[in-house]
Length: 381
Image (cartoon, one colour):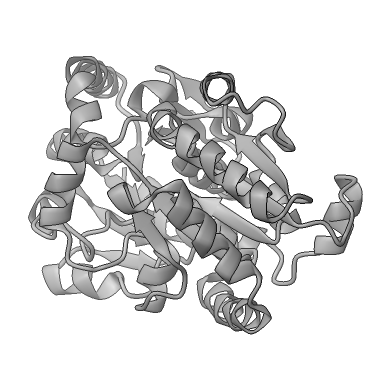
């Protein structure tokens, strides 16, 4: 009889983690079957989807409250499904506010629970370690500073690195990408990444478009690449272009292809999240810009332990790239920060050196390490 793994990812970055992990697990155990929630990458790897992943892709207190009853209803139905059709183990991929409660229920009923990607308890809400200890059988950590926290709390943990560091080349071929995208090598190109969630794009689209207008005033030859994760986010951005009377901007909207856009770009304007790590691993100078509802930001700001929100700065322990958050994320500030960065060849070279060191630290053959930590639990069920 095939072994069944329950698995839940809540957004695009989790779908990426899940797809690679599932492939590595199936390479070792071809009989495995995966059931739960995931996106296109996990579906391509063969999972049976019980609910669409987009239902969980909300961020910030206000957004979560708005969708609270729907999200809780999905979790209740998942719990019922997994207790009736018991998996051999459960893997929660990121999405801790959703997955930890589900993991707690399943673990109490004797189902081993793996949490893949440590919640950022080192950045904010460190008290979650107590719930994690009750809910999680084994933690898989993506960053090297995380395992110590779990070892101190008595939670079994493995550092597995980050799959993006395995996937992305240490030395991206920018000239070849420009040729593929038919962009002259001498053109000034900016990749604008407003986020993968609809709520993020709604909060950032107008600001990004007004920033492009200001850059164009100072660099008339500038071009802009805007990767968008879905039809919904593309629709939101297109509406913002119309609202800003900016349809004539030299701006190319892409379906996906975020990494290609970043490789081709001289500078990247990026929302906080996994995309900031992608930009770092692709050795691109970037400015991090983020907006969320004021109340969500007030609550989050009170609970955080570090002055940074972007992963490159968090992992390096200092401000290696600018962060402009909330009221500071104005088109004027973003324009100045981007142009200061891309016009400073020495700063760009220093960033590339810093990001190369980070890349080597995170490159750990992540999927295989994670699979090796998980497979022994199949033998215990």
